Amino acid sequence: MAQGGFIKLARCLLDKPLFHNSNLLQVWVWCLLKATHKPHTQLVGLRKIDLLPGQFITGRKAGSEELEMAATTFWRNLLWLQNNNSISIKPDSKFSLVTIVNWEVYQVSDSKDGQQVDSKWTASGQQVDTNKNVKKDKNEKKKIYSENIRLTDAEFQRLVSEFGQTMTTAAIEYLSNYKIEKGYTSKDDNRTLRRWVFDAVGKKQPPKTNSYMDASVAGSKMFLEGVYGNNSRNGSQDISDSAGQLPAKIIR
Image (cartoon, rainbow, N blue to C red):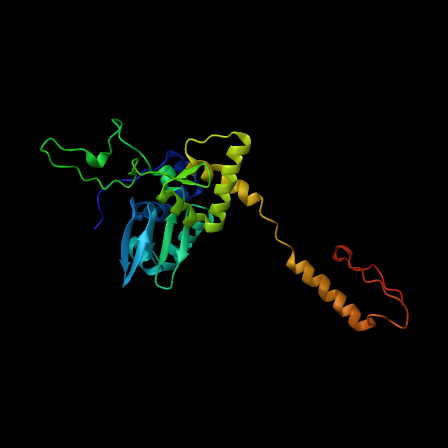
C-alpha cells in the first residue's frame, strides 16, 4: 500500500521529451515516488542497505510488477532515464540501487510560515502525518571539507554516490582553490559543485587516445618488417616512427 505524502513536479516537465512517452513518464514519476526522503536502512534478504535521500532499491521483475509493465519495457525506460542523467543505477547480484540525480536541489521546499508541513497540527490536536518527501533538515550541521567548502554528511555522501570518490574530491579541491585565487564566494557549496564545478573538472581530464589507430599503425609496421626485414639487403625502406605515420612508398 502506498504511503502518504507528496513530491514536487516542475512545470518544465511539460517541455521534456519523456512527457510525451506514457511509459517513460510513468517510470519517472514512479522513481520519484519510490525514493526515500530521509536516510534509513532497508533490509534486502539478510543484507542491510543504507539508503540516502533520493535513493531506493528495485529490480527488473519487482519494478515491472509494480507498474504492471513488461520487464523489458520497464528496464529499457529505466536505462533511458540513466542515459539522460535523471537517475543513476548501481547494479548488484540481487537488486539495483537507484539514485535520483539532484534530488536535494529540486525536492526541497518549506511551508510559507517557515515550518515544515509534517509538523502542523489539526484543530483536534492530532498531527498531520504527511511523510513529505521534500523534507529537508535545516538544522543539520555542515562540516568543512578542504579549507573552505561546507557540506553536510548527507550532501557529501550523495556526491560520492553520484560522481564517485575521486571526482568528488577533485571537484571540492577545485572549488576551494577557485575561492582562494579568485575571491569567489558561494552561499551553497553543494549547489555550486553540482551547477558547474563537476563540469569544469571533467573538462580537465586527459582525452582518451585512439587505441584502434595506434594498434593499426603498429600492426602495419610489424607486417612490413616481416616482409622486408629490419635491414633489407635488396634496398632500403623508410618506416617512420614520427606521429605514427607509415611511408608513402618503399624503395627496394
